[in-house]
Length: 257
Image (cartoon, rainbow, N blue to C red; front, side):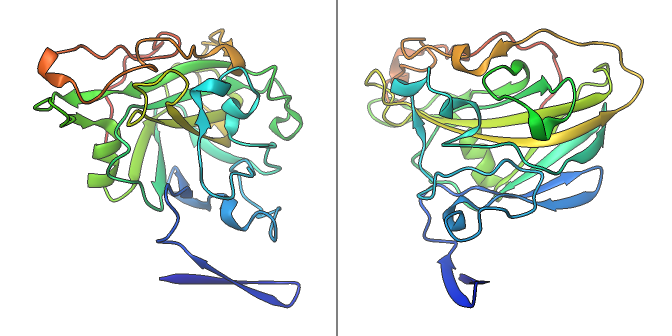
């Protein structure tokens, strides 16, 4: 199916099913639907009026684990803060809808928050401190010998691209950035070849919570040699235990798919 956009009198055809990796097309906060940011039309429509951060991965490609110290790892390639924000209650959930995801791109899915300490539209992404609120890695082992198991990304596909992120009930009210990320491990047997797909959304969290966790700046979240980043998904006959990358999970909230 093709989606058509008219920009400055020019019609642009975008085949949404052709893009290799997809993007988050919808964000739902407390029942209110917001459009995501479509990077494939960024050169023609850079300001899409969304709460999702604009990014310039126009080919929907990744940030590789060889570039984990680059600012692109924070919210995707050349990402800039959105000028809008959506409201969500602490203790509720955020529903994210991906356009598509490749079956070969097995790997974990993670979620972080960072407090803007003010206007998120003016946030300096390299100074934001991220704390992890949710993650899901390998769900079951595969047969091995080249056959991978079931991962969070497979569950995303099974759910037709929908993913739920629970917002901690005890988090202090304020303006935050939600960072959602898929790590594709299909080529991660080589150092520097894991593929990171981060996306960021501005959210205003309401409620009576009091917790303000400290976090880690984005360029220090990961290491290319961490066993959860440099990992061979095809050797499950060895019964490996996958180690989730990134800082510790601060909130033990059951993932809802």
